[in-house]
Image 1 (cartoon, rainbow, N blue to C red):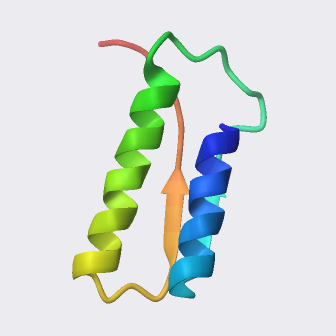
Image 2 (image 1 turned 180 degrees about the vertical axis):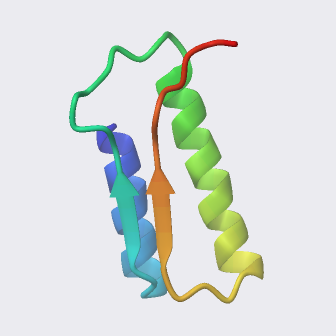
Length: 68
């Protein structure tokens, strides 16, 4: 999760767009692979925001939902 905080902070410094990262306070046990997928997804989303959106703020919400 530190990597998500780092990428959000880096995005904010680079673009000047406020970026809020919301992670559950009760740090769940993430299944294997989930942290990497979360990081790569956030990375791609922030890249797309930089290239294509006219955003004035960004909010990243991370949560874990049960399997269907």
